[in-house]
Length: 218
Length: 218
DNA sequence: ACCTGAACACCGTTCAAGT
DNA sequence: ACCTGAACACCGTTCAAGT
Image 1: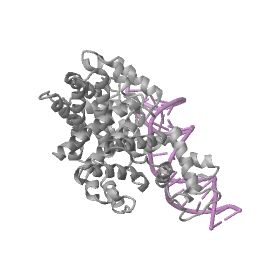
Image 2 (image 1 turned 135 degrees about the vertical axis):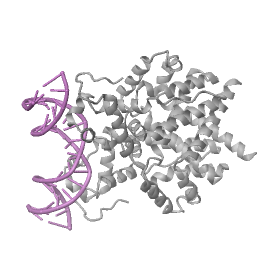
Image 3 (image 1 turned 45 degrees about the horizontal axis):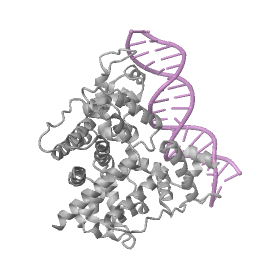
Image 4 (image 1 turned 120 degrees about the vertical axis):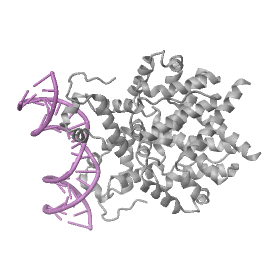
């Protein structure tokens, strides 16, 4: 995949560089991954990095490849809705392992072919289940948006202080203007993230797709 | 809401400053909103801005308030699912009007009380419909994630070139490895964004919530 | 009291130069 | 051929100073 084009620098190869970059970004956040910092970490001059990748964007593309590499999807089993569920949960696992990929996707599209395997799997299952192409596409988009959106918007990655701050705001909300929220502060703050909350939503979506499929059949 | 604390500078008041900041961010993107650029636009020294807001984060909070200010929610009518639908579409309108708020939310939580009105409305409708607190919370989260996630991840805001690039990648995908996607390139690229695609997903979610509600009733 | 320029500690990347 | 420091055009913000 990632062979240096113009220059072939010393011991390191581009994939190793991308792997280290991914580790930094996953551990400390995407903003913490700087060309200067990465070069220092590798013990090379900043500009030497530009022998491996023409710019930071290409480096990030390679980091996406590194994150996706070797992740085998689940072997299909059960009904279409069970297959859908397991592929979505498989994708979610990958996103939780590599939060920086989520962060990157919120800033720009990520169009690495390997990253489109999720799309391919989901669309395949939906078509097989009986959705016509015109519906499989937006139905995929729903699952994609929910899966990535949840990873991006819910405080799994978010700092502990973010969560505390959210609870503080919830607690100080004037009950007169926010009667429904005030009545269920605990449930509201519990529902900000986590596996159970994710699965609740996923199950509703699958219920909805099932309803649509019966509608199509009749 | 936003009264200067330490200093009371000349003609401008903080709300006006926040309004201009919002306009810049909505038009040119959140990154294009810089303290230096905003100050220049206002014809004041950069550091004078710090008389209005202690730091950029507070300025962005005020910009959120400006975006939310005066947006009246739809008057409830119809069944709970119709109410849900119209509140979600109302929120989506606001997000499309103010793409920078979406961008901001993907970078950090946005906990302005006024921005929680969406939550309050949705949760209220769900409770009224018959969802217990323990389910209304994750059900809200599903609607929130989908609505904001769609705005953040679909190329409504995204540049035209992003869309073209995505179509190019789709077109060059090897059919052997991506049979399902290759069979429906047109549908796949059409489903990347837009009102119809959003509504398709929203309708599936509402179908799923209806299914769950009948399940709860029986 | 109100306003602000200089300076600090950062970015990604170009350019010209080192070996 | 391979590597890199200096420099450029940016950031947000602190600090000390102007009026």
